[in-house]
Length: 507
Image (cartoon, rainbow, N blue to C red):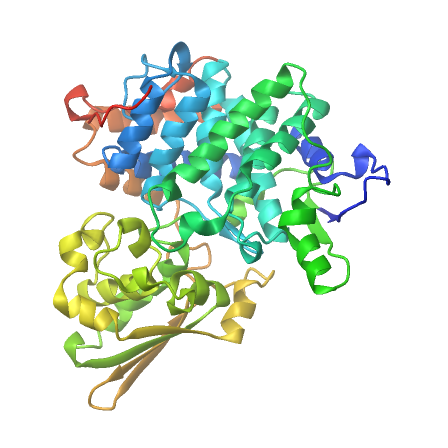
C-alpha cells in the first residue's frame, strides 16, 4: 500500500492528473491484478449476506416502493430485481436503486469503521446490476466487487466525513463507480471521470441519520448506486466531470471537508493521507470488513452480545437503578445520549431511529436475551412500560480509551464496544465489558461460510421456497465459474402471490 497526500491547490496551480486522488483511484480500478482466493471467498459470503437481509426486508414499505419504481423502468434483458422473477428485468440504475434499498433497509449487512464508517456491501447492488445488464461473467463480477470494496474501505480509512456532517455515501458512490469501471474493463481515463462525477453528485448532509430518521436512511446508499451507474454511463459516452474534484479550489475538500475547517479556524493546511494498493498489488480490503449478526447499528453489535451475557446475572431488571455505558466518541455521540436526540428515547420513534439508539437496543437485549430484526422493533415491544422505564435509566459517556481503540490501526486493539455499569437499587453493581461482537473476526465466534448460509436460510425461511433457497446457494457458491450472461442466477425470487405492491407514484 502507498499513502497518497491529498490537499487543496489554488486554480492558478496546475495539478497534474497523476497527482490527483481520483486519477490514482482510477489506476487501482484499471489494474488487471488477479483477485486472491480468500478475497473471492469473502465476496461470495457477502453476496449471500446481502441476499439474506434483502429478502427478509422484501415487503417492508420502503423496499416495496423502490421495487415499484424499478418496475416503472422495465427493460428487457437488463438487471434483475430482488423478489421478482429473473425474466422481469429493469434498467440497471433502477435495479441498483431497488436492490440497494432492500439490502440496507434492515441495517444488517456488513460494516467497516475507521476514520469514518461504512457499509461496503452497498457496493454490490449497482456493480451486479451493470454486470447482469452487460452480460458479464462471475469472474468479471468478482473483479468489480473487489475494487468497490477496496476503494470504499481505503477512503474510509483516511477521510472522516462525519465530523463535517457529510453522509458517508460520499465515499460509497466513487467506489461503486470504480468497481463498475473494473467490471467493464474501462480505461483509466474513463474511470477517472466517472469517479469525479460520482464524488461531485454524492455529497449530502448527515441529517438523513439525525433526529427523526426516515426511510431515506435505506434509500441513501441505493441513491449513490444509481448515481454511480449514471456517472459511468455518461463518461463512457465521452463526457467529462468537475476536476480536480478532491483538490480543486472549489472542490469538496475545499468547502465540505477539512480544508475549510482549517481555513475557518486558522489552523495549518489540511492534508489527508489516503492508502491505495500499489500497481500489481492484490485488492484485499474486503477481508478487513465484518458483517452483523444482529439487525442494528454496528456499534451496538458487541453491546447486544454483552447484554445477553449480563442478563444471566440479573434476576429482576425492575431492580435496576441506572445503566451507564462507557464507550467511544462515535457510539456516544451518534447512537448514545451524547447525540442529544430526544427521539432516541421516544417509544413512538421509527424503527430507523430505534436502531440508532443504544439505550433502546441494550435495554431490549437485556430484558429479552434475544434480538429479532422485526419483533425487537415492533411498536408494541418499544412501548412496553417496563422497557420504557429502564430505557430512560440508561446514559452513555465517552471514554478516551474506548475512543482510542475505536480508531486504532492495530487490528488486535480495534474495539467497537464498551464497558457497562449496571447499578442496582440495593447498592450492588454489575460491571462487564466487550470490545468486539462475537461475530467479528476477532470475536468469540467469527462468521464463516456456514454462518452466512445459516443467516440466509433463517432470514428467508417462510418467504422463499426451499427449492429457490437451494438453487441460489448453489449458484452463488459457484460464482467464479458462472459464464457470461448467467449472473441472473444470483437473483432471489418470491412466489408471485407473496410479493406486495405499494401505492402508485409517477412512474
